[in-house]
Amino acid sequence: VQLVESGGGLVQAGGSLRLSCAGSGFTFDDYAIGWFRQAPGKEREGVSCINSSGGSSYYAEAVKGRFTISRDNAKNTVYLRMNSLKPEDTAVYYCAAVRRINSYPPNPNAMPYWGKGTLVTVSS
Image (cartoon, rainbow, N blue to C red):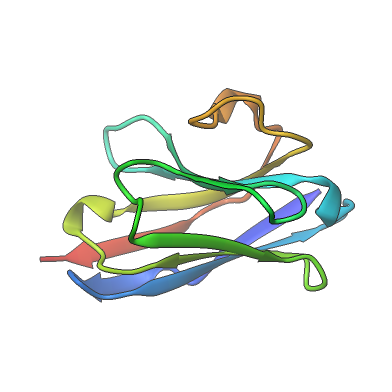
C-alpha cells in the first residue's frame, strides 16, 4: 500500500491550494480516505474524509465551508481543495486510508495506511 501526497507549498493568507493523494498497491475504491494535518507542537487532527464511493464526506469545523474533498477512483486519487487559507492552516498534511471510517472526527490511530505528508505554509 502506498499513498503519496502532493500539492503543498507556500501561499499567502486568502489563497488556495489543491492537495492530491495518489494511492497504489490496493483496491483504491474499497477504501475511505482521510486528510489529517499536524502543526508544530500540536497533535495530528482530522481535517476531512470521504467514503469509498465519494458519496459521503466529513469536514472539521475549522475548515468547513473553505475546504472541499473529492475523489476520482478512476485515477486512484483523492483531492483536497483548500480556499481562503489562513495562517492557522499551516501544517503538514497527510492522507490516510482505511476500509471504513467509523467515527467522526476520524481517529488517526484507526487509520492503518499513511502517506508521508506535504507541507502547507500560509503566510499572513
